[in-house]
Length: 445
Image (cartoon, rainbow, N blue to C red; front, side, top):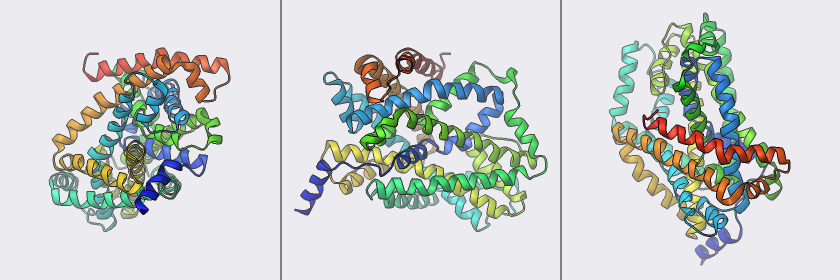
């Protein structure tokens, strides 16, 4: 009887964010993930520095803001999960299938990245206890190589990570994701600021800043432009269901600020990525190390930096905590999307929806954690198929099926000039950019 009452309460009373800032921080927490920290600084430095940055900011403005506004608008207009939202807005046809594509994107990003969280937690712990101190560069490289093949360690740290996730997402929206985002996002900002200040005080730190920011038009190529488009697209988290779900949780009065929320989220996400370069490169260049990208930067280059730095155990622990904060706020948001779907479409209690979602995610995460080959294949499927086609179909739906007038009404855009700009971008420019990205990802450009 209690289960029936609990189930009915979900049908009658839909969850909402307690505040607008809570919704913005939760969405920023989802967007500002590991890619902002270990990928963005490197592609800036190797693709023209300041020239790349300017082009990236332009892409964020013409792609990130319009598409995030479109995604917010679908969720806000319906107050439903992605499948239910498309079904309500399209009335006829099969557009709700794109809602399933968005949900698949959220499930995959939560599942196949599980080993990354294990790596980060391992380095938080081992840096804090000093087990990496005194190792030479070869030994540090071997430490990471050994970790990714040590299934016992990986599953242990993955299990700890899942425990942390469940402790947050099992609670209602305001006491779970919203509350933890309000804690961890400011915490990430403080850690990054401390590491930036420390890095800038090191000898030769200016060389890292020059590498990062000096404009070099000779390094900016067509591939650089495509890298900027790809980074902006995936960094903001377009078509991953989460932004749509979070917008569906907005209070009615906060829906007046949909465009402003999209600007804030893309702005803060970009700021985190931009600041990461100041957090990393001064320290890397201060100790004469080569910049790297991805896991090589985080788990091989940076431990060498902290081994040479006074107070390296403290600074290294802060660095990996910051990484975990960024990663954790992303993954709890990703888990919310399938939970929301099962609650609404299958009338489950939140507890049962969490259980079903966890089983699905863990079943995908286990092989991805066991095999880097499977990890790579799932990453390829997510980035080259699920996300880009989900985004392409979303732009077509908003621009041509739902219509710009309905979109503008949902987004509370009253100025005709602004509406026309958004309409041109969503109907014409953004689909062409996404198609260009798809062509480039398949090596056809």
